[in-house]
Length: 438
Image (cartoon, rainbow, N blue to C red; front, side, top):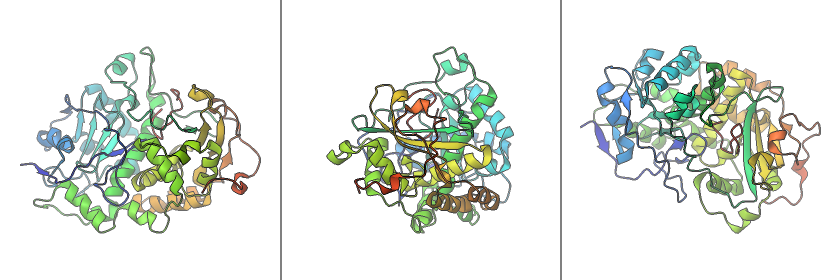
C-alpha cells in the first residue's frame, strides 16, 4: 500500500490567486459554499521513466480520495544532501501533453539556481489540460500548474480547457472589485494574456514573467508548509509516516512560515478578512460588506500590512503574496499595482479607481513582513534580496477616478492623504481581478 487514508475531509487547497488552506492547520477548510476546481487529472502520465515514475500518478491524485502517500514512497526532492537539479525535477513531472513538459523544462533551464532550490519540498509537479487554477496540495506535496501559462501556439492553446476560473463570479454583488497588475517603471505590462481567441501566438520571452510569477507563488506555499530549516532535519526512512503526517508535524510544532510570521506581524483588519472570504471563498456578503465602497476598503487596506487583498484570505496566502511580490521586484524589477475599484461599469477595464497604489512592497509594514518571509524562505539569498527590498521607495498613489485599464501612467504626485479619512468604516485579458494569472 503506497498511501494512507486520512480521517478528515480536506475540502480545498492552496490555490494560485484564490484558494483555501488554513491559517493554523494544514487541514483547515477554506470556507465558502463552492465545490472547488473540477480538475480530474484523468489523462496524466509521467513524462520520464525514473525511479519514481511507477508511483507518480497514484501519489499526485491521492488527494482526490483524502489520501497521502508515504514519505518513503515519494519523498520530497530536497530530502538528503544532494542539490536539486533540473533533471531531478523533470523526473517527478507528470503531464497530459508532451509540449507542456518540453516548455516547462525550457523554463527551468533558464531559471535561477535559487528558484530551482525552491523545488526541494515538492514531491512532484503536475501540468494537465484541465488544471485551473494552479495549486499546491499539502496532502500530496505536489504543485499543479495551469498550462495556460505555458502555451505559445494556437495548436497548444487548443489542447487546454479554457473554461473560466470557478471563482470568477465571487463577490459579484459587492459595490467594489479588486484589481492588480505587474508593470515596469514606465507603466508597461510585463506579463501577457494567458487567454486567446484561438489564433494568437506568443514567444517564449513573452511567457517568462508570468511563469516566474506563478512559480514564486506556488513554491512559496511548498516552502511555507515544509520550510528549509525543517527539511534539513528530515531523514529517511520514515516508516508509515505519510507526506501529510510530515506537514502536520510542522504545524503542530508551530514551524510553518505562516505561523512564524503572524505571531509578530498579524494582519489586523477583520472587515477585510471577512471581505476576502467573499471575494476568494465564495461566502455570502453581509449587509455591511454590501455597502462597503472601494475608497473605504482602500483606506483600511492602506493602514495594514498586506501587499494584496488576497493576503487576508488565509495566512498561507499572506506568505505567498508577500514572497511573490518581493521576488518579482528583486528578479525582474517588477512593480505591482493593487486597486479597489468601483463597480460602475459592466466592463472591468472601465471600472473606476476608488483607491490604488503602485509598489506597495516598499511600505514600511509590508516591507518588514516581506523581509521576514524572505529570510525564512531563502536563507542563502536573504541578505541580497532584503537589501534590495530595504532600498525600495514608498508606494505611489494611482490617481482615483480613472478607468482601471487607462491608469497605468496616472501616478499622483500628492502625498498619501487617505490616512486621515474620518468616516472610513472600522476583467480583461491583460488585467485579471485575481492575484495570479494574466
